Length: 239
Image (cartoon, rainbow, N blue to C red; front, side):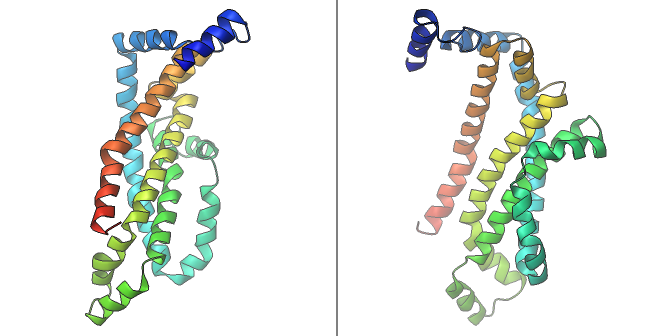
């Protein structure tokens, strides 16, 4: 209602904005209906989610492994810890020229940008979670004979899980940014391509429609997966 009121006042009454610069919710709904009816949106969502899932799960494996290695070896922590933090500040789109030169204009480039956008957030969260494990847990475990792999598997990793889950959620958001960066530049299909098509046609309703779809997908997956995992872990640890 606020959106429609702003449109009526700003566009129809005062003429502050032009209709092609500020769409009404009705125009966005009509655009959404058209994209669904011609299967453009459904195909784009499926293709984008496929790329996102592949890239994100790869970054999950690499990021957690990298975080464990950094914590395990002091030399690597001293020399790579700050570098990873610095690389995390780089926007995903900065890696796109490397991706194109290394892999060409194909799926591999998009997946690489998705991976590189979320790996560092996950590894930093893993490192932080492990370093902040309550020392009394480690002492108690060692007193009972736990060491090496058993110490990590039974004590350290479970204790670090709340922080790791937060890193996974952050990595998920960065993965979306990497996906959009790649698809908006050279993908033939996907949500990013639909977004760029709306921009090139000066169809602001289509642009806003894709933005809303991305927000809905992100929130839905967060509620269905990450929030449930986080809630279960917090319940288990009495938080």
